Length: 318
Image 1 (spheres, rainbow, N blue to C red):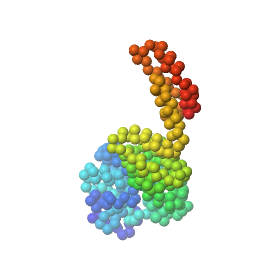
Image 2: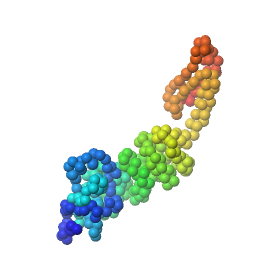
Image 3: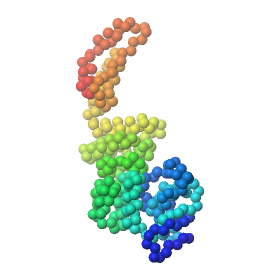
């Protein structure tokens, strides 16, 4: 087992067997979980250009930086790695490495929040921590000072945290998200585990849920919205968005009911009327079907017979 001299104060590059590295301890992981083919190809072609960093704890090694790189080495069957081994977890070393990761955009909002929490645990002074948050990590200073907010962000369900990091969701949306009840967060987690939502759809949904929570005092209805095994992911996303939107805007339900009644009235008379989804548009589409056994003059009757004032009523809903 490689040893570290007692008087050593700076990290030393050492050859460490992979089987003495603790891969399960992820406390210090702040980068996104992103092991892709580009990383694999780079390591295969050039080796580790940036060695991982760790500390020795008894006969094992705890990883501070380089989790994704080590995961690639392990999956390729490597037996050892050149690692920078520090004598202890040092606030200066951790801050320097964390800021480099942020400048490289390797950390999402969850990773940055965790990095600030670690630096706080390592004793970094409040004023400096706030500067690191604002200037180095480009996150709200309150994440460095509000333990409740930081704990709420880091306590989100796993699929939610992974999504926030991978899609780099803004903290304005995350603030609204962590204010939702735990049952709602668990439902959202199940949605994201089934299919990652498009960023704008996710943001709109969280905005609407936040509004509903403020207005009604609960968002209990979300627990009933679950993807089915046969759902197409795009159709599921649209169904989810509409279900939340209907709850946020109950007047939309009555508008849609009336619009469907009007469309049904014309459909019974041979005229198809299509109105824009969610009434977001400025016109209607009318379609009259004429089969080969009908006299073209029947078109005039089809158009002239219905109560056309109902079209004005439908237009007024847009």
